[in-house]
Image (cartoon, rainbow, N blue to C red; front, side, top):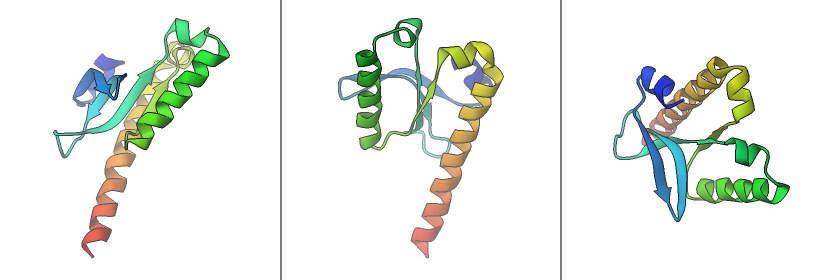
Length: 111
């Protein structure tokens, strides 16, 4: 995942710490290298096969990060193994969408 996103030209930082949590991968903002545009979380076999309470903690963790202005996308291992191209394209579209929406918001604020 890291390599494929890097091949698309994105700068990726792994294991980014945030309030006691670690975000698997964070994509450096295309227009502002001092911040991230998107966090990418990956589940491992242990999470995929884990108990409902572990999955609930994962949901809580994502909600917490999003409450601190992180945009988070998740790549499920099952989806990755079935169609990695689709997963990378989905993440690529999301990054571009976030950059575009941010640009529109900035233009509206200037008016």
